[in-house]
Length: 269
Image (cartoon, rainbow, N blue to C red; front, side, top):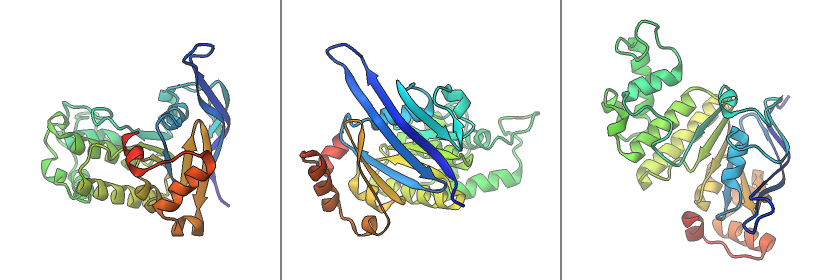
């Protein structure tokens, strides 16, 4: 039987109510995701993508609606309480890591298996170090050779890679990826996206990835959602998605909204 991991019903959020700058970020939004689904979420600037993530993660509380993770109502739970089931990787590579700890120590903390005597891993078990080394090597950007380097000395792209690995390695029920490759060069972006895809499949992790690249939105994952002005205006999966082109996606957006959308606009949003 298929297990539902995420259920969102009638989610609404308005900022600055009653003011001239009132903004309806989410409008009666509904979404259901089964275990192992990998959704790519696209939409123009101001569509509500970040607000949706913030409501799911518990950093913003909705005005109305209901959010369930693995059958538990978490609508008004604080973010720290949801963290047991949810991992999030932000756009900002400075978030999500401890800069004064090494790569290996950061990942060891994410694994949650440190010893009481030496929790930061100076006497880290050989097998754990080997596991971290082999996992880093899959990203193909050389971080496995820098395990004992402090994260604060890494480039933004390398640090974001560590953030991603820390999120995935904990095997969360729900993984939120907020343009997690935005700080990477094209080659590293491809490597990280492939690693993300493989990790999601391996762990059967329910995942939502915000992206401004429409090619990636159709190539990765199992389902593509298009968001506009607080609504989902398209939900594409299966054979239709497999044969859809970027041009088809642009035309679909235009048919639903009457507005034009280009890949350049998405990348700048």
